[in-house]
Image (cartoon, rainbow, N blue to C red; front, side, top):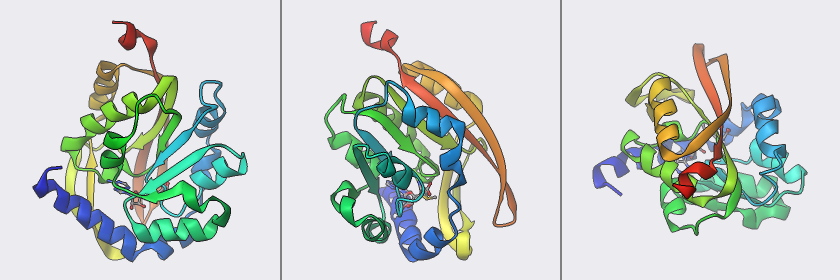
Length: 220
Ligand SMILES: C[S@@+](CC[C@H](N)C(=O)[O-])C[C@H]1O[C@@H](n2cnc3c(N)ncnc32)[C@H](O)[C@@H]1O
C-alpha cells in the first residue's frame, strides 16, 4: 500500500484501539434491525459464507449473524477490538481476525462469500483505495452474491476529532460518485435506505446500499 496513506490507516487503528471498550459500551445496535440489513442477511443468494469488514467488537452485526448459526468471518484493523469480540463470542473466537480490509481482500480467493457487509468502516479508508476495495469485494463475492455497505454522502476526506475527542481520519464520496462507480464495476443496486441520526451532538446522514454482484459483467 502507499506509504503516505498508510499513516492515515495507522491513525485510525490507533484511534479505535484507544476507544475500543468505550465504543462498544455506547453502541445501540439499532441498525441491525433495519429491513435493508435483514433483506441482505436473509436473501436467498446469501446463504453461504459471510464476511464482515470492520467488525469491531462484533456488536451488533456479528451477534445477529452468529445467532442464526451462519458461517461468519469478521476482520478488523484494531487488535483491541478483535480481543473484545473474541471475549464476547468465545465459541466463535476463531472467526474473528485482526487484518486491514484491503490487504485481507487482496489475499483472499475469488467467489468465496455469498454476503459481504461493512458498516461505518469504509469511511476510514483513504479515498485512493475505495475503487480497489470495491473491485476486490466484487471478486470475492459468489455469483449473484450480495454486498451491504453504508456511506456518508459528504464527498470529503481528512482528519477531524471524533468520539471521546479522539483524532480520526474520514473519507467519503458523493452519492452520484457511488452510484456511477458501483454501476461501472458491475454491481446492481437492489435497495437504498437513507437514515438521519444525531451522533455526538451532530446530525449524521447515512445511506445504506444493498448491491448484488450482477451476472451481466461476467458474461460481457
Ligand atoms: C465505526 S467502527 C464500526 C464498527 C462496526 N462495523 C459497527 O457497525 O459498529 C469502524 C471499525 O472499522 C475498523 N477499521 C477502520 N479501518 C479499517 C481498515 N482499513 N481495515 C479493517 N478495519 C478497519 C476500525 O478499527 C473500527 O473497529
